[in-house]
Length: 363
Ligand SMILES: Nc1ncnc2c1ncn2[C@@H]1O[C@H](COP(=O)(O)OP(=O)(O)OP(=O)(O)O)[C@@H](O)[C@H]1O
Ligand SMILES: [Mg+2]
Image 1: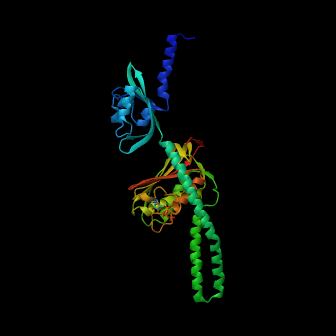
Image 2: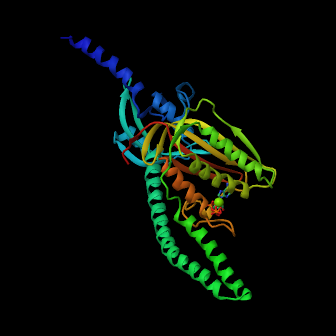
């Protein structure tokens, strides 16, 4: 048994180390609302070291944040704890995140302080938003598939009848049946695209760059706009199982869109990297391959950004709006994720392919 003094010493050793190992970001403010302590999780969240933030006023670190300074003052004055689950924190011009914060009163060196716990919640929000989008995409796709299926059967009959009729007609009249057959073939082509990829992928273990090289080759064969393809590969990426034709198709659809969007002689970058701790279809995946297709064109029109991957959504007057929906199906068949970040001047499509098994995450 330890005596009382030793027990206190023992406990404080653990306490000192505990804060530095917590996953939750913890910070301590003094009475003047200046920062007195940050644990490493808080340093990571705020992307600044404790040395830089020590003694800095809370308001200077969190300008424009929705944390109410008056409420923090109240914590000091009345000791009343508060939790706010939707605080928006701005760090710099382009980076913001939403966090849940709990502020409680505490005492250090016999003077009142505030203990703040910060938990970033964007990721959870993003997972639910992604799950919702996926559901919407699936129901739009199923609806269109059903419709396409219904068109396909009578269309076959129509074409067959026109063919039979041709034999009964003179040459001049045959022009009409030829027209029916041609248009029926065009429709059949569209209907097949609407139905989407229907074969299971044939997976083989290989290097992802071989597909990207094929994309470059295909583009260079038919390069009316003199587009320059920049390859920025990470050669250390290990082999992975995938269906070469399907992945090729998925990437080509994306690259073709970029070619259509950008000015002649501009460039498109094909980039590969290893990505860690990504969320793919609601699961946390430790290691994955990231393929990015980047262009510096006008960007995706604002009004179709939310429904970009739905079938029949197009920003082009002669587009069928099926390319990205098909790419999405093909990437899903590889248990991967297709996403996009776009603004005028820069568009990046990202394909994530898992290298390791995903772990379910609470939503
Ligand atoms: N890199 C890009 N830059 C700007 N807009 C893009 C880009 N990629 C896609 N888009 C927009 O997204 C729309 C949807 O693309 P999607 O490939 O699904 O259909 P589409 O190109 O219109 O028709 P389809 O591919 O079936 O011929 C495009 O019409 C275009 O407006
Ligand atoms: Mg397209």
